[in-house]
Picture 1: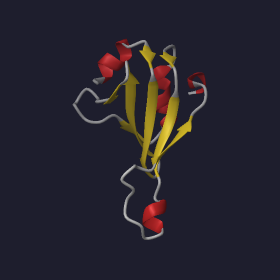
Picture 2 (picture 1 turned 90 degrees about the horizontal axis):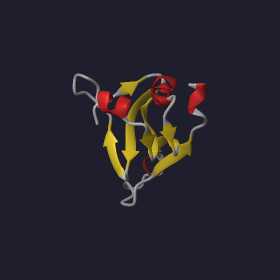
Picture 3 (picture 1 turned 30 degrees about the vertical axis):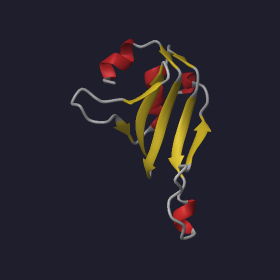
Length: 99
């Protein structure tokens, strides 16, 4: 989904802020059950070092759920292979009006 399309969309099933590394977040949205990563005007994945900046894109919009997604490093830390079922943690985020 392009950023300009995101700005025109009024309802989101879920907004996901993916924590990639130390203070770097990537944005994806779920609309009508379909997840898309948000791309900027230059065709690059939308990222920011400030999660509040990404959250602020959704002021005045209807968002059913907003979560922070984090890949757990637990399996790697204890010497286990990556889990086939995935190990993504989704932490609910608060009110977008605070962004």
